[in-house]
Length: 364
Image (tube, rainbow, N blue to C red; front, side):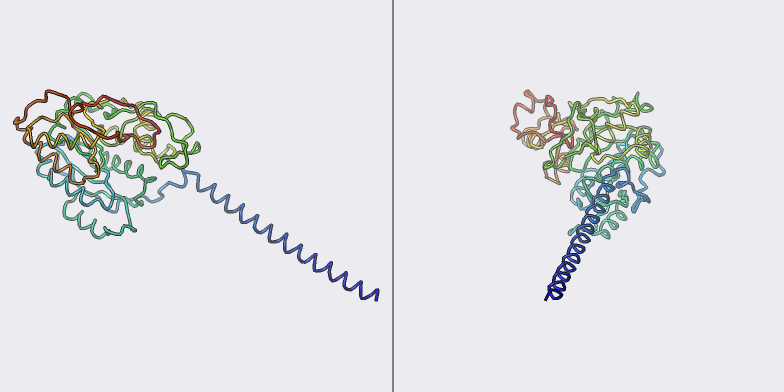
């Protein structure tokens, strides 16, 4: 009986040892997997490495500046892959021939969007063949890739349109009074060989640290609490020299995904680029652009707005520039009251991406 009890005890101990071994082995395995996954995630947050495009190339490359010796300004327009209607509105408002009369050229900057349900790559390629104004890079369309798109435009401008006096970077959801741009550019003629950026200047903008916010920035991505002075990417004026130097510096400066802040702030500060504030020509309200449009159509009143958002109306660029042609023919009357006293607008749209606050400017 003693021997039988001994066998039972030994068997119990053996089973216990086996179970303990399996438990420890599984725990070690799980611990190893967790550690491996943690290390992998840590590597992915090395933003300089993670965002590096090892083999950047153009998938579509326009040739707008070839054989043109006199170019006042090149417009590089950041546009989402599927924004076909917006690009169409801009082309209808000002065709290539219209732009040539103003000594302007224009290209649209796109990435790749293989998951887009409505627009396919073949459609964009056909659009490019028809208009010859698409510059597309081999990166995916995403908020965190906007810096790639912005830098691609500056690189293309510096490499392919170096004979232009100015480079104008703008977004495709912004309305611009194109006929007034030449007058604005004349202001900066003495600066064509200097490093400068003219736009809606933003100062003392605070980095958002709230994880739920779309523009949340970690301290690892950007450690200072306040961004350097920069300009809104809605619309700004620079030159090929500045564009080229900004792109070149980006190759040795850690990547940051908020493009306006990174390019016109971080990089510009390193290069000692001079900022010029032209915020008086902007409105932050799409309603003001709409009011201007109504006043032109119904009362033949001049519009003081040069730059403003389209408020989601993809056709507003065309409608606005088509209507304002009347005023450009000097058939409109001057306003007796400022636009901001006669038009009701909603709360403003922040001009700078990723900011928790924005300075208010008097609207004109």
